[in-house]
Length: 273
Image 1 (cartoon, rainbow, N blue to C red):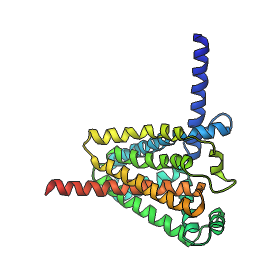
Image 2 (cartoon, rainbow, N blue to C red; image 1 turned 45 degrees about the horizontal axis):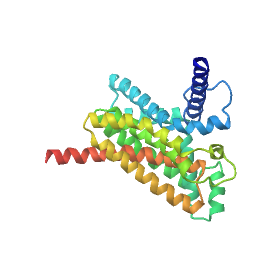
Image 3 (cartoon, rainbow, N blue to C red; image 1 turned 90 degrees about the vertical axis):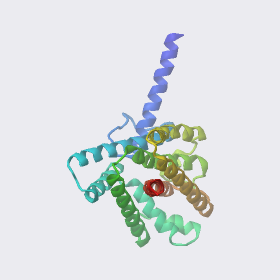
């Protein structure tokens, strides 16, 4: 009995480790590669680790920020380096989806033409403008975050929520294509998205412990923006695509980061008045 129980536990741990490696391999450049290519079940299970991978990315970026602070890097340069590190660690995958979605949805064409534009590897003017705007907003508010003291809860929330949103979108909305990267995630269950949300309690508890309600406000704002955007896009396309998942990730990350700093500024103003 004990031996069979330990055997099941080892198998379950092995399954979860493969799922985590699949999530990290898809969402980041972090060298956690599985020994064998992930199976369809590994990919499905990987959704439950999206939130954890996002929180891990936020923690790693915070660690980089500590090193930059020790080197006395000025705020504009530190923010630019953090943006560059983020893009490098994620391979620009989500920004690629953000640009493709901007090109397609910004074309105001019919559904078939939008999907065709999003499939095209070439980037148009709308995609370039969308990327520049997102990177500028992220850079500007990372500067503000740096000047305020660079508390880790903001990064953990922004990067954690943005990855969890993709898991949520996968299980809530149908996939709009017959094939594609996102098609491999079909069959994911809502319970996978629920499990994926558990690591988001880390920045929430940190924020409450530090009395930083702005982080909770930002999390709510990011979730509301993602919910609204996903619903509108799904209504237009009859579902979502891998590019849209990436776009939701970028949008959620930027909205959460910006909202946290704006909310913190307002709370300081109210407290000082």
